[in-house]
Image (cartoon, rainbow, N blue to C red; front, side):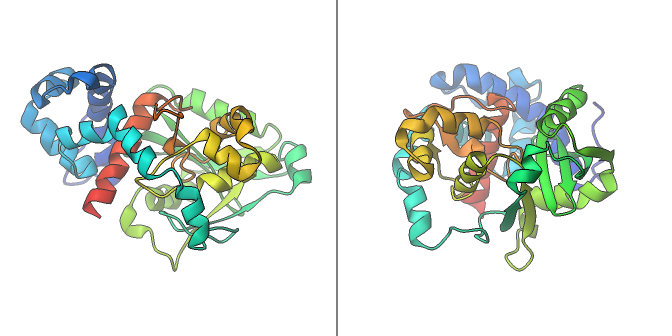
Length: 293
């Protein structure tokens, strides 16, 4: 991939180019975080100089590489989890629940009717397009009611990402239309546009149970975390953690509906449909937003 012309590239193009280096750095951190490697070692693994890596991370997420490393270690994840054990109860206590609740991105949501879902979204027109993001290429998918899908793809994996999303709603009509999806991508990944007086509208396409799980995910604040069993206790029963895990894995609107903030019961990062490297990157990026916001 050619480096962008920084005089002409948009902030999202720059962030997407930065992510190629970030991905290599995070992949190295995944393997060696227990050793708390020095910046020089991370930079070598990422293929850049220590100074370039530091400048890049500050530009990409507002943190130094060492701060980022700390943000995504398992020990840090466990501390976040310990501090956030009752985060969903707290969200209810301050009234952050219901169809119109606001969260980091100031989102309002609705769902397709059960009948529409059972038909495989037959008759629904979904427009899609790929756009640069801080976490690689993002596939945004919109219906007449709002954003209905958001996926990620590394270079060369775009076709697979699109096929994966299309399988979720096999009977919908799909139209490539990046002009229609570009405004959504621009808003989703630019925190300066997260305004309560202009919420992002999304639409859930899933079973009643899945929608309840996804709605619960939206109550996890940025910089916090929760567990599958805690979500299960909110949705139905703590014993349903496995079913909740399956619903979390089927979340069609990644990042906006923050399934990346769900950890294993011991604070382990566990799985992520778009890859653990990307999950660590998102959590570290969000740590930067919280620390610098």
